[in-house]
Length: 344
Image (tube, rainbow, N blue to C red):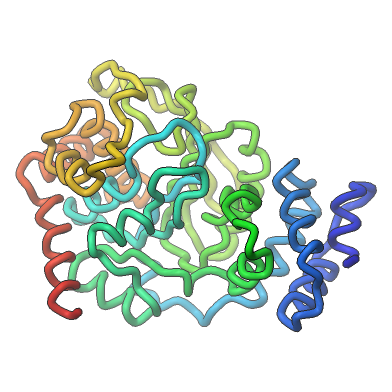
């Protein structure tokens, strides 16, 4: 059994970068047994690894990233969650579209659902909005729409190899660690990234991963948690936000009540599994539950503030509400869908 697997299982010492690189080399060469990949993922999912092991994991994958990202892409912001928490409609995708309609350049990364429901990739597939397959396509989408939904090409190819290697077992049942840390593995160094964390116990490890991302080119990384357990900012309970600009420098409480947002509950953010597209349109056009629109607006405003387009939360919220109410946000989605359909 490979040293990376046995070391993780025994937890007697850290797994350093050279051992991780050896594991990925063996995976690429087809020299691993299926049980080794399964054991590695199960061990990672059981407990977040120590700092040295996590650093080795991140560094070992950095060496096999795609080519350099064009400057036009790096000027955007990203919103992505770690998964888990109460079942909600896809808040981050809605917030990305609202922010783009406000004039914020957005490149959104995401994944399929790991714990049920619809992930951003699943929803975009239903909506008929394609993912980009290259940096050139990403740049073109940014130029035309002010937003791009990046495909799997931004992630280390080893992750796809690992998923295929454990088949017929479902990576979604084994890949909790990969899903949680996935937002920090994409080669899409936007100027800012807002990452929602459902499980507050992951914050320490994710702060380290966020610092790694910031040192790789992202100017500002925000992690947010809340007592609702959602992996986005919510508009009805205080949200704790940890910010990093090279190093972790600050944390603050974003209290919706101080911004004039109304009380609510997670029930008002539930998805409508039988009609996900119609429900998403309702939320994006302000015809859904008021708390849903307020939560989307709060996340869109956070993208504007994190991306330093404004430091005024009130003005950012007003701008987000405006593009929801006047139809600009849903209009942007319709333009992207129509364009995609025309090219089929």
